[in-house]
Image (cartoon, rainbow, N blue to C red; front, side):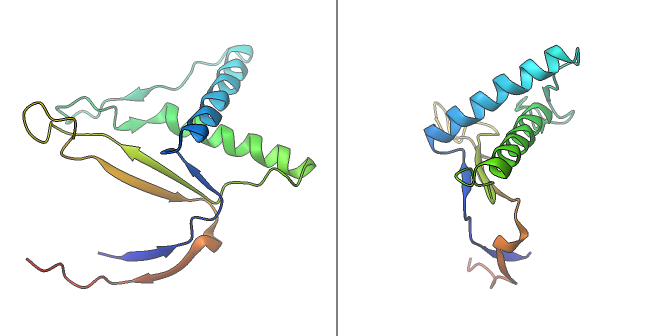
Length: 131
């Protein structure tokens, strides 16, 4: 196991509603470009061995986020008010219900993707977790 110290910097935090609106706009732009180019939209797929059908293969989500990064890069080259995102944080709700009737899932987790390597401040080997 390896730990990391990350400065999220300018984070596309998908736990914040205003950033979800930004991502929704990026989807609309991406869809329009694909349609005009007569290209099929990528889709999120279920993993073969996932009994929960949680769409673990996230081709569409990845493509939309990459498109958003490209949009921001183009805008930031013309307008310094637009800053590229350094990191992306997302919540993934996955797995079986934690208990009967639960709103929580057993494999839910948060992930941080680092776009700007300067945000990686250090690495460490964590101490063993006490039982």
